[in-house]
Image (tube, rainbow over all chains, first blue to last red; front, side, top):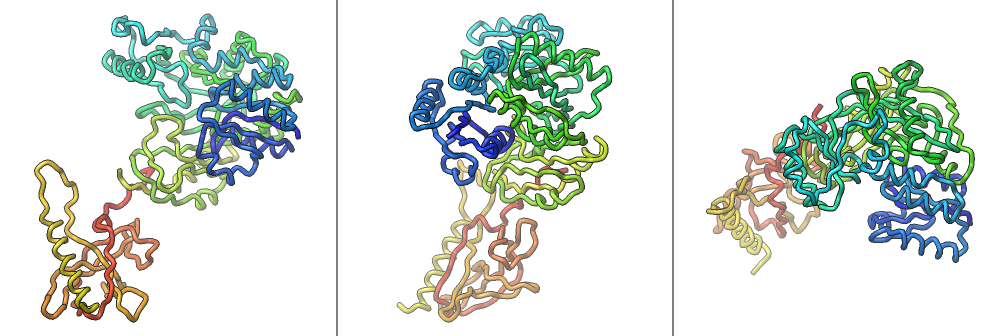
Length: 405
Length: 135
């Protein structure tokens, strides 16, 4: 049977939707996962025909599994992942086993933030940066006369984990010490702190032709970390502000020699210039796929699967609707006793989707990474402002009851 | 030993442990919440439901032992009010979140009961949950 092999997923969000759309398209879906809990919850993954668990997903194990599946009669149509750090390895195997033509080298560069910075070193959108080795004498490095605040991040950080804004030498020392304890072999990027509005750009490249699928403005909450708590899909992107963004994105795509791939870039507008904060070799996680679907009628995850299958993706906008997504974060730590307001939120005007992540008994805490966002509301409106008001109002109905730890 | 005196003996033990809890003091342990109540329910031989007494307009099956007369096997019980997560009085077991002490008391003859069901100490004056997000 025609099979699509997925390497890892999250329970909710873009990667999970990929599994669902593949099953809807009539493919047999096989999921390789490191998450033991998914094996225990297999009943909740109705779209997955076969789930295989590995404590650690390695290329060798994945290859062995592909061979075994083929011996059992599976016709491997493609191999795909929407989860870091498996995107490039999945693409490489899709090229090898299924004849796909995905730009693996570019995906590998995007998976490694240090490599991305190095590759785009000469590009105007690249901020001032320095890559340091934690095994070096960084105590000496931090006396280099840096201009604070600065951003310190691990080259392999994802979902805002291990990304810090440091205000002074003492904080820098503290963070570098912490990162050294985690893994002294990891590469660390120090870069200038850029202040300005942040946008996320979803791109799909097919035969070297890049299509900007969506431009999404991000609302960022900065407490302990930078957490994106709001996403507004932009409809009218004809003016110079957006055209400069599109130009910057297209030139980055060109410089990385991307021929066939899906990716997203996060850029900030600073002093009249677009600067690249980071880029990732896949659609953004969480509600992004649903937002684009509600805004333009494009199922980007589905179209990415088509790209991997060698089919022409359809990125035509079926309609244009103002969409805003509000993410919910909290300010206290505790055990979740109950959640109220989900149904009330769903009944509010313009609400398209309400998603609550944690179940009873989950330990919840203030957001230290994007993974500590506990739910979202997607809403539409006649105007962008109305969409935002609808999403925020609906999200306000959702309340988490926490017992102090 | 008959059933009635058995309950009386149990209540005597409960009162002793409750006093120990209330008087417990430590040199090295910091106890944030003083515990002085072992909440319980009482059951008679003839009814499936626990014994209840009225506090304001609502019947409660939850009690604290205040005094015990071993001679007569009579006990003074104070009523504990069941509240839900919002702090509202409830008579639904599924909604029980905490037990609050009240001034209301009832005198019972323990010979009328055959079983005692102690409850976790944590129920008494359990702090209400934090509701997030705050705004």
